[in-house]
Image (cartoon, rainbow, N blue to C red; front, side, top):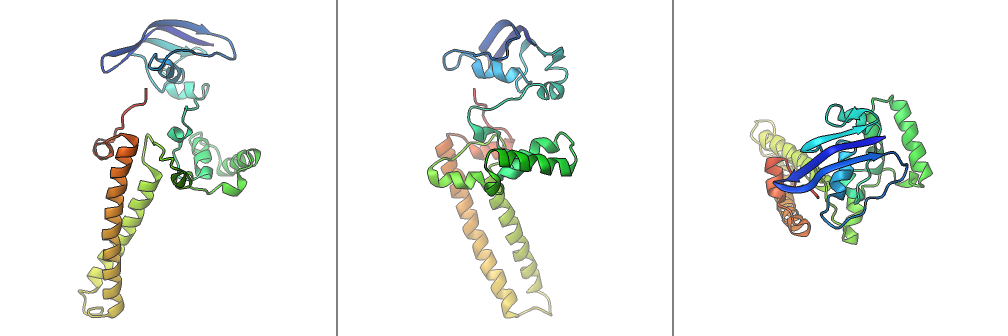
Length: 228
């Protein structure tokens, strides 16, 4: 049973919910309302993703404000846009993410992941990078956390910078000074780093336009705007 007692909520001073009182006991419940009426906010309150500004939400006797972790084991949440809940870069890792957070044994996690993939006929795409597959179809996807493509780019850049640094240092030593392969490797890697930095910056700017979001500010502050 879910109880909503005197719940009110606002975003930046704009009231979204006002003095809501509900007692939900049915297995299937639909919430109907216009855009911006607070449907999503109310749904997110049911498992503690959003805490009310006033009032309380209680699930089977457990308050979302006092023990959100326990509430989330009782109430699941499926986002309207599936890409908003993708955390890991591949299908297999994303399925395992929640299971690992339940502190299950590795063998049990692997077995459950295999069973879920088989049940949905996704076994052959367990390692598929969903984000990169969606780009050719024009689906940019919006992630509340780090964009997997951006993360992959940063990892590659760090590895190349490490190679560039090491070969640069090697070229200053007596043993490797003037050695062609060291100088060539340093030069090629440095050029690749410059190209990838330009591509990365352009990619960020393009995604800022497509998603209508200041991703540069998000990288600095660690926060993205909230979907309402």
